[in-house]
Image (tube, rainbow, N blue to C red):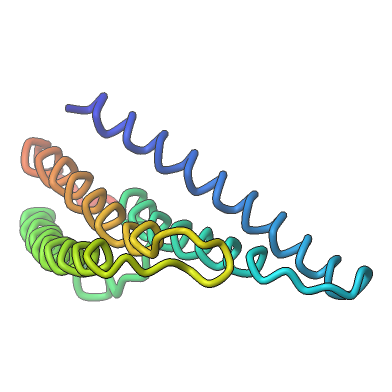
Length: 163
């Protein structure tokens, strides 16, 4: 189970890095084309936008994974370790529930895009590919948060206050 989490993390990090590189290169090429050559190529902008969407959604999961997402911990920090653990479990269950709801809803959106056959204006790719970012990201959030919840439940409760 731990190896699945590590493999998923490596894949996510690789996709995030690739999206960042492609987004940066496409945006740079668009600026160079527009300012030096005088020609605006719309698919550069579109490619950068789609990479940014994938990167942002996958980075959301990475933030949940490593605990760097925004949180208000003033109350939780004052709780005993046992109460803190219960609150952490409740938060993870809420995140999992919300992510499952978004995942299921996004599958409906993707199915609508498949049925419509809509293509993007600049790249000419089926719009299903940009919309796939939602179920991919929220599916990853569900899987990683479930693995994290299992680890949290199995780990012993600390006996001392530790920060």
